Image (cartoon, rainbow, N blue to C red; front, side, top):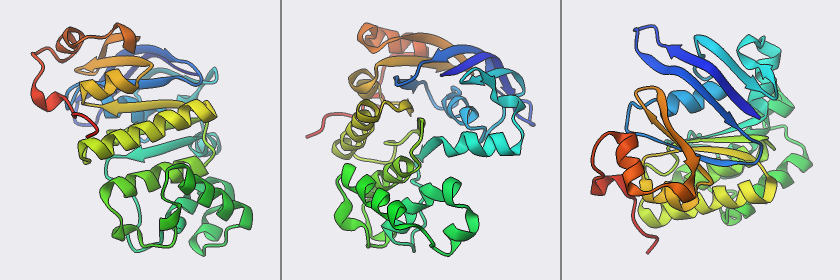
Length: 256
């Protein structure tokens, strides 16, 4: 369980990324966070594993205030949280399987990981993770030989290999075409269902949010302005969240 209690985050330049956020995310939920660029979506999601650190309030992970964690507890938190980035964050010159095996870093230690000293069990887990996102045949290709959609699926496999309790995906389809975006979102949704992994995804595209989310959180100017089941959301809801009429750019489009 993840709970924000009066969480605010002010950056060193004075910009307020989060303003008095109060929200609870339950185990196994598939939550999509929507909002325009600069609304606070990335700050919200990155505060959960403290890639950015809130400056006020409490951020409870399984009822413990993670903002009080020392380095050991913080390392353990990050071990249990898989992160998927818009830019994939792969090492291009490394093979796909080596990239996926970096998901075991928190379990094996830095030195072993640097020298590629992974157990056979870890390697089998990495191959299984690649198989689950449909690209096991690319295991020994270099990461930079893959398309953008394939690279994003490698990053999902890497997160899976962590065996996380939570997956955070920060604009995972922003760089992809519509058919590939749907493949990636279907992978995330299926993994959420099969493994009961709490999944929080930032999206700009309203049609994809409505299609894949169980619950939608809307943000504007660092505040939560909507929180409800996806089934209750209409285009008018998004116009209220965004504070403006919906444009064609706000939709990703169909799979075909």
